[in-house]
Length: 146
Image (cartoon, rainbow, N blue to C red):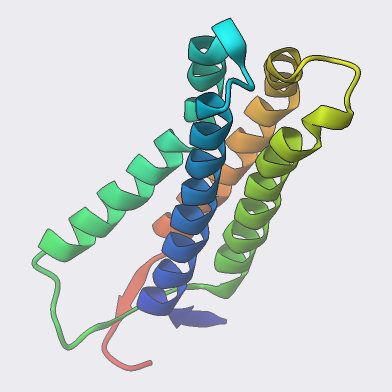
């Protein structure tokens, strides 16, 4: 089954910008309050790649869609399965990153050490999310009737 791309893109944009905004605010607050101490640069260097590349992918796709010379009469649809997969994996991934930061005070590792260690499982997880987003964007199809 196919669904309109505009609605599904808005949902993915909301998920990624809300989740990334929360992560950014959390990192800023913890940095300002000295949570990372002298390792603040390293923590930022490890955390920014967890969400910034995906934001660029989403913005780039939206920009490409906005500047394309597509027929305005055509309805652009995407496969519902790929949207749901991208939606679920995006939420799960961003929740995992947030939980790593929020639950770190309960770890025996220091917060910077836990963030370093978490990249072992976040990198493959991010790869799955990126693949699902790619499948979502590739599954676009223009039709004249929906």
